[in-house]
Length: 430
Ligand SMILES: [Zn+2]
View 1 (cartoon, protein in one colour):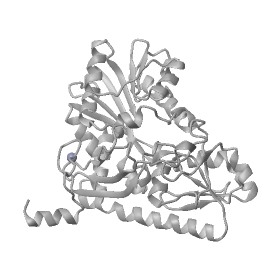
View 2: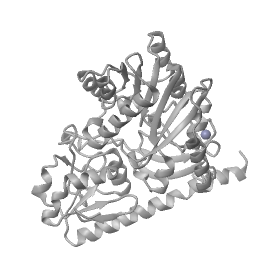
View 3: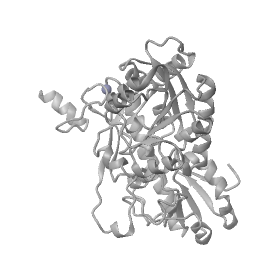
View 4: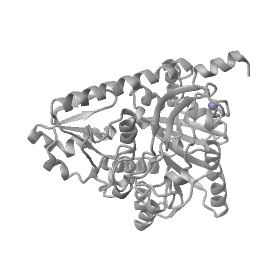
C-alpha cells in the first residue's frame, strides 16, 4: 500500500482487515453512518441478568462504492440472533391487516388455487400464511426460530425450522416442494449470505412462479431520517437499483414494484425467472429506477451526507428530554421494538430520562431493554403512572398507538415521536 493511499484510508476510518461487500466483493471504504457500540436489539434481559456483562457490537454501516449496497458487517451469526426470537408478528393489528390484504391480492392477481403452493421464508408465527390456508391454498413456512415456528404449527400452518439458502432450496425441490409463490417479508435485510439466499429463491421457484419480497426502502430510510431501523440483525439496506442488480446477477427479473407504507416506507418487488416472458415488466420498474437516479442513489455524495442529519436528531431529542426533566416532567416509553433499542442506546437514554416502557407483547413484559436496562411493563401501567410524556418508540405504528392510548389526554399527557424529527402531539390532534 502506498503512503498516499494509507493516508486516504486513515481519513476515512479504515482499519486493518477491511470488510468486503457481501454482494460484489468490493472492499468497503466508505462510512454511511456510525452509531457506535450497541447490544443486539432483541436481547431483552431478565432481572437476574442485569448485573452481568453484556456484549456490545459496532453499528458501523458502510456503503459499497461499486454497487451502492449499504451494509453492516456480520458481527454476530444469525444462529445466535434468530434461534429464539421475541418478535411475534401477530401482536400488531396493522401488520395483520397488511398480511390479509396481501394474500387476497396475490390470489386474485396470479390465480392461485388448491393446486398451487405458497412458501414463505421467515414465516414467523404464521401471521401471513394463515390467510392462504383460509382460502384452501397449500402453504409451507420456513422459519429459523423454533419457538415462533411452534406457534405457527399450532394454528395449522406447516412450518420447517430452518435458515433458508440454496441447499435448503435444493432439498425442498427434491421433496417436490417447488413454489408458485415465494414470499419474503422483511427477511432479505437479515440474510448475511445474500447471494446464496437469492440463488435459493431461484432454485425453489417453479418456471412460471412469482417471488415477492418486501424490505424497507433505503430511499425512505434516508429521507425520513430513520437511522433507528439500523440494527445488527439488519445486514443490508437496499435501494431499488441495488436490489435489481442483485436479482439480475441470479437470473431473476424484477417485473413489478410497489411502494408500501409499512416499516416507514417499504418496497414490494416482484421477481420471475429471466426466461418467463408471460409477465411483462411494468412501467413502475423504470419509473422507480429513474426516480432513484434523480435523487442521487448512484452518487456516493448522497450516501455520505446522511451521518450529519443523524447527529442532529440525537441533539434535538436529548435537548427536549433534558428540558422536560429540568421542568420536573415524567417521561415513559411506549413499545419495546428493536428500533427503540438502537435509538436509546445511540442517544444514551436510560432510566435517567425514561422511567419505563410498556408493550402489548406478553413475551417482553417483565424484561428489560438491552443496554439501557429500562423495564418493560404491561400497558395497564400507564393509567396508574399518569406520565406527562409518552415517547412512542415504534413510530411506524404511531397512529394506531395514539388511538389505543388516547386516554392519556385525561391527565394532560402528550406524545413524543422521535423520528424523523422530534415532534410533540396532543391526543386528539394530529
Ligand atoms: Zn458492492
